[in-house]
Image (spheres, rainbow, N blue to C red):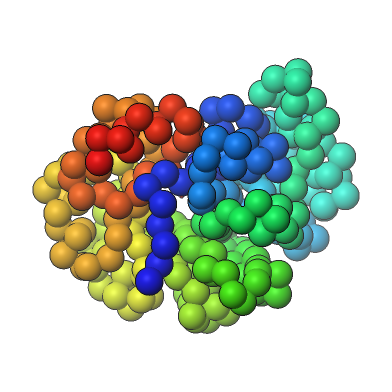
Length: 246
Ligand code: G3P
Ligand code: CA
């Protein structure tokens, strides 16, 4: 049985620390999160690192595409100053470092494989192979999710026994067939595009529905009332009051 806490820290605790850094993962744990989500992309030399965007400008002091720089160059960048001076010096973590920290903090994990033109399957293959070697066999395996169909096929191939999250932004007409074929453990849907009726339809699949990204108590209360199991949030401590209502 998949253990899914009601709140999942989004990119760590992205409102309170620079997203997708070790500081953000620690912040999620400090705020009481039992599970964190983070994004993974490949550097030019094939190192899986935590990064949401295709480009470096928004969350580092670097420029260009993540996939065009090698790890050594990306490691030199500052991934915290953009967020606040107090976080200056924060580095872009590798997937290995993030997983090791989550193991040490006893956090459940959702690894999101970010779409990367032509490299989605490669990213998933490298990330899942690495995660499999690092993750303790006696702990709940990471939930691995993606919007990228090729990445999901590779996840299924490399870690066939791990839970897979089928990420949906705009619902494709064949969402049910895709989810069944991938044996998805969860449907991870965009809260802003859904309503009570669409969540009810998703729930006929019989899998937990996770909604992203929910950052206010009223929004969380609403999606929980629709039957969503868990929400991804940038502010775990801000949503704690919503849990008392459900
Ligand atoms: O995994 C849920 C959510 O993080 C997906 O959207 O853009 O925040 O990675 P995004
Ligand atoms: Ca994400």
